[in-house]
Image 1: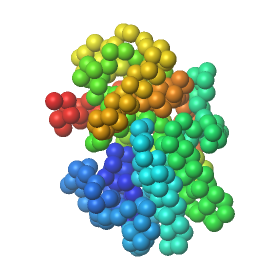
Image 2 (image 1 turned 60 degrees about the vertical axis):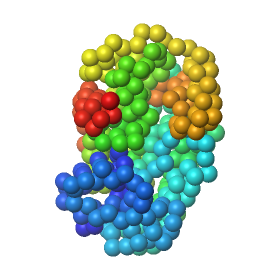
Image 3 (image 1 turned 180 degrees about the vertical axis):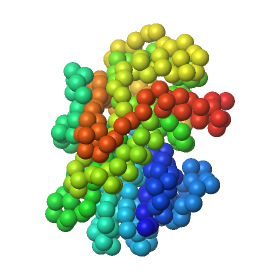
Length: 330
């Protein structure tokens, strides 16, 4: 059985591809010609080059496959070119799902995100029913993923797309090659470059548990249903304390008000624009998101899929070890 995994060179996608290989799938990996392929080294996948925004290359990738895991996404909090993000995340998803319908793909697992849900202001854990609206979404990444998920749900209802939706929380662990926004926090923490923190919270999960959740959704998930794949709710200072213990550093002690963090973000973004030096260390959208504790529960996935994430310390420790072994901390 040939299974297509989009975004298989990335952090989550490569973990999903490896888990499927362990389960006996013949994995075809759709990657861009410019993708960093280190995450696919020494594993038996068929690499197909293409672009989600090009329907012909999507067709070539899908042809001959029975199953599809659409993991690929343009994930950035700093988005000076929002049109590209909407092309990748919305139009790209449309191309993939339309091709899945055309070719008769038997089962689809679509990787959405908890970013499409509406976190509470009071710190309570949100579940799959915590539906937001487009106006609730902060930033282009959240908006684009929200629109893409709405598209997938509509195709399930109107065109019988055989798709199950999974919503990972905040993955950590090995092979975060870019790295992600959370990976950069981990790197800054183990380098001792976080002088202060804000009052916020995240749900942290090992990337291997996210991959296992994809497999469980493929085998046991109900068509059209959404399953949150999370781990443990932690405040930012709890995460930084855990990382400090792992890395042997002193955690930050100063809590910065959100208003001060917003000023830092404005300065950071301005410096990035002037220098052309890439993504700023702090973004205004990131600070806006931090005003809410992004806490979630995976109760539904535990009950319906048999999903059981490992202790979060393992994910943080594996991330630190991988970054150190691969020269990110030099």
